[in-house]
Image (cartoon, rainbow, N blue to C red; front, side):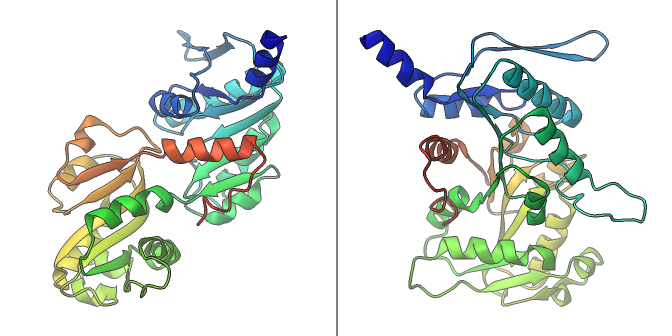
Length: 328
């Protein structure tokens, strides 16, 4: 009788599964939930095809597949699709996808007359293959959530980044800076996480990206940055061009120091080399994407994990509780 009860309790516990791009993160999440990563066999055949096989039963279980869309991007996406299909064919009760960095989110509209809306295509693929829910962080465009007919939780990385920033900058004269006009809402929301209830709001500034790229300096900035420690807020570092142009404009406007807070560290091309000489006092990142040793070795870099937050989110979902607290 005790064994039967124990087995029923275990069946109600979430199953954490990982693709190859998120093994370390998935291990931390599984450990936080008091379990382990579900065994999966993923092979890459000589012709480039990928094969996926679950090595233990998931029948009737709520499976959380952790797979960020890291390079090689399309291999990560294909792995994810095959993992969902394998779980569906193995009679999983529910399949939730933890995709910390959801690629193609920048392609959220027809940029040209005959172009594809790639974010919508990705949504349709994930739904069609059998996913029941998508959980991600800081979508480049929030409207991407509307492409999904299944629940899509776009969690704010500020929940974990803000405490780290607040601890490091306690008592400093800070200005929160958006790297462009489109990112102003993100910077404003981040500033809200940095102040306690009833406290005065932090000053905000915004960079005119085109003027900054042209080397306009102070003319590219709207906001009180002179003499302050300026914190650039952005959702991703790609080639690092936008971030570096913004930092140069702030220094030209006599900012006392420049730091940056970024959710997704993509680091395309020679971004790491550029950042090595960029002179940021601090650079906070999350582990929504794997962070290389080269990046971790850069001056001022601090990587903040999303694992603890994901443990709380998974528990709340499994228990039918609201995620309102996560959104602050």
